[in-house]
Amino acid sequence: MAESENHVVSFAKAAAMRGRTLKIGNPLISEVNAADFSGIHVKNLGKQVGEANLLAEVTFEASPGSCFGILGENGSGKTTLLRLIAGLAFPTAGSVTVSGKNPHTDTVAALAIISGLIGIPAFHPHINARDNLGLFWDGDRAADAQRVMRVLDMVGLADEAGKKVGDYSRGMLQRLGVALVIMQDRPLVILDEPTQGVDVVWAEKLSVIFREMAEKGKLLLITSHDFDFITGLCGHILILDGGRTAYQGRLKDIAEFPYYFHVRAEPREKTLEIVKQLNFVHRAARVGEALELTLKAENTNALVAALVAAGCKVHECALRHYSVADLIAQRRAKTV
Image 1 (cartoon, rainbow, N blue to C red):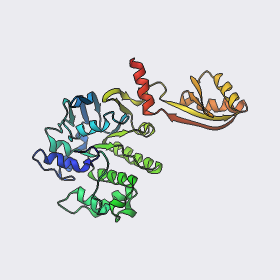
Image 2 (image 1 turned 60 degrees about the vertical axis):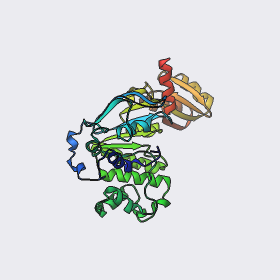
Image 3 (image 1 turned 45 degrees about the horizontal axis):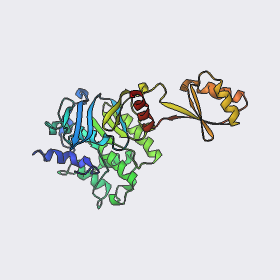
Image 4 (image 1 turned 30 degrees about the vertical axis):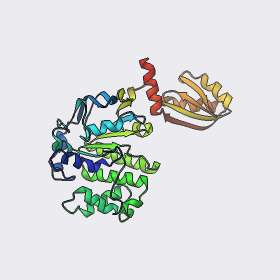
């Protein structure tokens, strides 16, 4: 099965390939008591193809009512991990359980708890968004038309509901995939790069939706290249590097300063001189016409006040997070 295939459809296929049937949106979902949902447990999970280790010895737990971030560069094993959790691929080592159920041996029961979007959304291109959601919701009966339209409105596609999906942009397709996940309304939500191709405005709107889902007791597993997006949502993260765990734990514990401040002020030489005199600035580096400063966020007001008092004109003082590549480099340096 191709990595790019849309796996909201493949959840049903995975069950069918094991001699069973599973209707996406079937009554099983109403039988799952979210209050009794215990989250997921992954232990020493691995996936080897030939001599290539796609994933090795990955262990973590994630609890209901939270967003759990999975970070890593291309080829780090993020999508492979999600496919193993969703039962779309078999591990060659270790185990995974979803609220105590094994998605590889107790497929129907486990997948009734899961909704997800893994890979590039691949809806039927020749029919509209409204009918696509109706079809994937449950092919054996008509979907609730009002529910479909409410969900499309949540992701900003109500006005495009009658448009053929083949004419959708990449970002619109991604939002349509999120709409299907919302419709399924299950305790475990798997989202593989949910903001890929989505503009900044809608990325923030989707993050609001994801936060609300977590607040209502769902567990969201979210992969992303965007560290800023993850830091705005997730309290705990897993960073993968070459299929192995580079870091797993609380986001705020990954480093003393997982962020820096991008400061533009004039005159530049005087700004640098003042900054170096401030004992709460731990590091200062010139980057182009700006300064990259490491300090605690609580000291930014004092920083700006000191610059202004010295006669500097401050144009920008913005908090920025390090990239995933920066964080991986930090972890590699600590293991040398």
